[in-house]
Length: 162
Image (tube, rainbow, N blue to C red; front, side, top):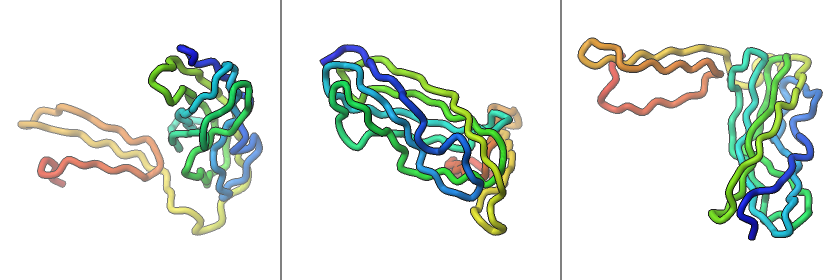
């Protein structure tokens, strides 16, 4: 087995460079295994809007080992549905899914231009920014900012009061 990763990101397959608002896409990369060994590959994929706000982040993986010299897709399991027209950037990291192979390869940013508008009532996303300040004994100890679409969970049982 190789001791360092040697893969190339060939292309961003989904979402396409020209995407439509309200259409779901399963983010997918095409990667090539440049080693003489089969590899399990995985990674992370992020999509950011034109203000660099993270709107999507999911792990990506191949459905099995990628043969030596072969090209295969790495896909997320969750779809991304852009609801707002604009320019988005797709980037991330690919790494080997084996303990004896080290290193990673970054990719992107790939530009995705979303046109049109989602149909009225389509989707449940709304753009918000939430800031949570945490106090202990009247002293502010932490601030968490969520400059994202409304989809976050906070679990601090018995410590928060509103």
